[in-house]
Image (cartoon, rainbow, N blue to C red):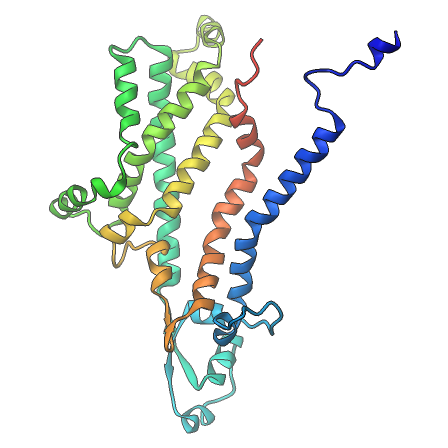
Length: 317
């Protein structure tokens, strides 16, 4: 009996294995968080501290990087600055210490709004179209279904630069260059293949009997899809939305090639922030920090669905 009680399950990990795995996960998390922490620290450094060598870990924090990110400044003489009324804001005070005055807002906020509109708009369209296509492939007999699925997947096999010139010429002829609609359509076309493949796997795991029972009770095919399939595919939809949003949010090549003005997004704009004498690294770090917030919040809000979506169907009875 004692021998039976002391037997170790081949499924349950041992305490030592748990401790080792936990230590590895914590170490990996700390290593991956170091660049994010360094970017944030750089955003609250002064320009001299941001380029000092060796790098400064202890420094006096300042909001100069964020002020430079959201404003444009011009240099003025000390006499001109002394004649001005008292500063009305922290940014005004910080700017005057550099013998400069705020000339107006920068272009970062419009570029940031463009990123929000284009990324979330294309994600919604990609997930919407991908869900419908995945449901069709999963539930109906589509001629040459395997060949069509492979063709859809093959659109992601080539690098974006391979089709950049044809897309640029096509957009110029259609008048879609430097437009939010053009970028939404392009990112949707790129992401829809990923959405179809991910969502088809999730929908395949949902038993057909649920829909058949609903249609026997009087539901139409569309009503069964809306009230039966979609609620059970929520985890897969959330996971797919996160992956699509990450691509659209961080995409740089197409944004740099096809936009330069009214529809430009934040990724190609942030590296162009120039300060006195060269790159304004605190402002660049401040823009990067703010740029990370929406995708971080979106992922945290959907983290439970993401974890369940990744492991959906992993255990079969």
